[in-house]
Structures are given as C-alpha cells and as structure tokens.
Length: 118
Image (tube, rainbow, N blue to C red; front, side):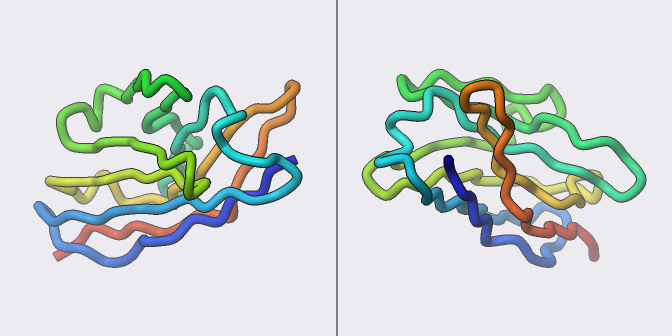
C-alpha cells in the first residue's frame, strides 16, 4: 500500500508559479518500486483529468493544456514527486492530486488546492 500527502497549493496571480510536492509513505520501501506516478486535477464542476505522469526511468507525459508550462519530477531517495507549474492561468485552478496504480488499485492523496486569480 501507499499513502500520498500533497502540499504546496495556494493562491497565485496569473502568470505566477507554484511547486507542488507529493510525499509517499506506507508499506512500500521506496517509490523507486512504483513504476508510474502522476498528477491529476479536478476543477469545480468538472471531471478529474490527467495533468502529467512520470516513470522510474524518467519518461514523462503531459496533458496538452500544460505542455511547456508544467514539469513533473520525482526524487526516489526522498519518496517525493513534484510538479513545477509556471505561467499559471485561471483555468489551472483546481484541486491537484497524486496518483498511482498498484496491482490494479488506484491510490490517491487528499489533494491540494491551487487557485489562480488576480
């Protein structure tokens, strides 16, 4: 099993930046054992959507809406995943969640709220 705790959300003006963190814990020894992890987000009144994923060999995938603005990374030694968000737009406002799927089971954190507004 794995437990995620997200942090780093907040209120930021359009064009600003935020760095989200996702700390993993649980019965796994290290997130190095988790092949793929990702960030999702859910805006008010909308379905949860994929933002970005990263594998243990650092292969990344991004939603078209965030390409060139967001960067996903992971530090296996610290059991932590990150999402650097630059050039933020009001449409990036959402709750951001960590995710992985282990043995067919989806694991989610509680999320961290990002609000982009002037």
